[in-house]
Length: 370
Image 1 (cartoon, one colour):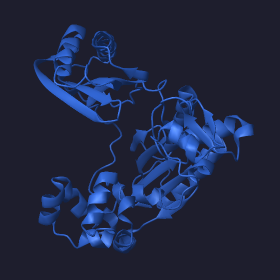
Image 2 (image 1 turned 180 degrees about the horizontal axis):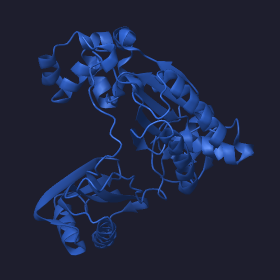
Image 3 (image 1 turned 120 degrees about the vertical axis):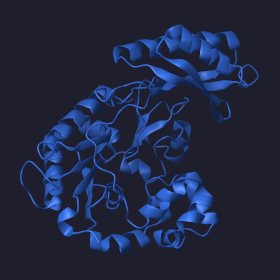
């Protein structure tokens, strides 16, 4: 049994339709309208974020903009303004640090906070969350939702429970009942493919998941089974980490039209390798594993990886390996809509902390649903 004095107080803050909300705030003509941030509805871009008015029609992040236009024909498409989103995010983080130094950003629009011990000496995490939401609205004219609980998993699920502009508390004594009644699609870490498989096995709620033994879950879902076994029981001992070490560095690009010319593609990979090399040198990073990502015209996506003997950020070596990996694909015979290169197994020390990588993807938009 966990003694109450040892229970942590975790808050997960998630901004409400962040990119779209910033656009509506800065342009009064967009308020109350179905706003879709992303590429052109006539192009090949994807939705970064949609306002709640657009979500009512089924529009969501990572959806092709052409599909979003069909679902929501009256939707207003706007190009993202990353600098504006980043500025708002910085203002929001300043508010977090008024209460605790234990802030773990997950993206521009969400973060975990551990307020077990906090700068203001407040005993109620719920009151802290309430104050933070009020300050965010006062300072940025934007709304956020918060989840409060004793662990990260439940706090994150709770923040999504009463959106937008909601605050949900799940204390330890209510966690079991809360998780048992939760639809499996609401479990953080259960994606669409896993959800489909769980449904085929009769797992539709937390209570259904809880009936499975850890051994059977591992047999069905691999090592993720251990995670599912624990989270449906509210077991999550992960700490809020104020700094996360970057695990990879890479860039990718979705093309405005499909590419089939092998010479053009290899030249592009060479230029991409040079850009990645320059970026890694700026943060004094090197990697051992080089991965090539290819998305074909029909959206089939594959990756090919190769490790090299030495840590590298050398443009020529990255490009050479990428070209070798390209030979193990159907590029040249099949048209390509996206190419990317990344390096992992980095040699960063703990002095090099995680920062959000702005991919060359539809003018630098970072996809995130909120």
